[in-house]
Amino acid sequence: MTDMATLSAPSVARINGVALHAYDENLSAETLRQRACTELLRQAAQAAGLLSASDTASTDGVISEGASSAIEALLEQNLKVPEPSEEACRRHYAAHESSYRTGERVRVRHILFAVTPGVDVVALRKQAEPVFLDARCHDGTAVDRFTEAARKFSNCPSGADGGDLGWLSAEDCAPEFARELFGHVEVGVLPRLVHSRFGLHVVEVLEREPGAVQSFESVRGAVVNSLRQQVFVTALRQYLQLLAGEATVDGVDLDAADTPLVQ
Image (cartoon, helix red, strand yellow):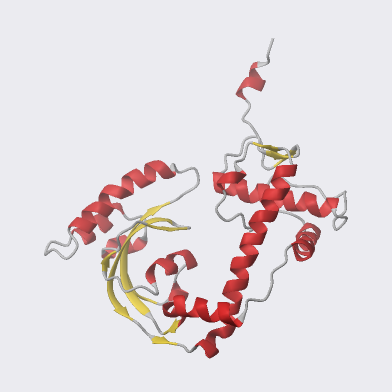
């Protein structure tokens, strides 16, 4: 007869039999993928002789200092990131010129639907969508429904001030939030929910100060680094797919990872 405790025990995600978390831990899909990618690389470093076989994985997602150094050496050996050509750099700069402005600022307000541990993101989006649509439909009207909605729904302290964040530069924001705000010309409620590490945002740009475009020569180093990073991410994704194909993966969907970066 099957033991009832076995039936009720939560499943544990594993890489080649190595647990990625504790039995009673409920992790988001993205956190699981990050841990799985890290464990794939840790085991690959051991197989390559770069890390002692005595190094063991923990169930809290934290790897040893030795494992971190070994993974860095592993990636250096296996990922070839060529220097981008001058032509590629100039093409990238021409296509993203607005990204290399200095002094660009935006005056913004937002309504935050915060992502907290254990939150149902699908349910959170269903809560955010009607508020977003209402803000879009009443953008520019005399009745300031945005302020009312921010005070009622926002999980940010700015909600008490109608969601007002004041003037922001790119350095004031999380990178994923800054990408949605800067280098664009939109004014008004943005035509999409903005995703960030903090949650889902309904965002209204009230004013823009465009700043000044920098010359290619002055930002060449930043352009080179951007292209290197793009190539590195692609190479890392392909390498992780190779490792996953050779491993026994249980309880985690690595195919769903958009950017399987190790954090």
